[in-house]
Image (cartoon, rainbow, N blue to C red):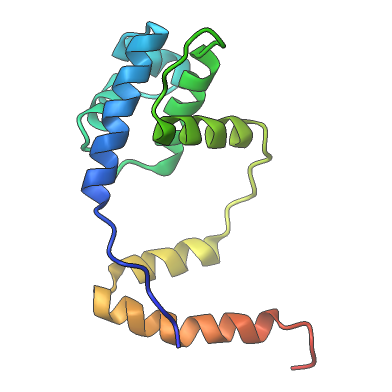
Length: 141
């Protein structure tokens, strides 16, 4: 039996992250435009993220902002929210990680999954997760 975690309040998570990004950007001394230039993204992306409207922003954009903030944060800057500290640490680790080549099959699978209703997603996972476990088993098929 597959168990599902409780529903996550993604708008609330993104709003809190946006407040942390704005606080850290201010602490580091960047304007939104300056942070966007360093992060190689748009000022609009930074603005949407800070306003908590980043639920639909690509993860790569959020990570670019986090990497830029990590690079701008020096040891003398103390109080950083735990959520932001964790995101900055993740971004810092990812900044040096190799980027895997795109997998068109995975992209298709994700688009198909995202198009499903919540109920259908649960049904899909009930079928897919045991299959993944089966094909992941190193034993004979």
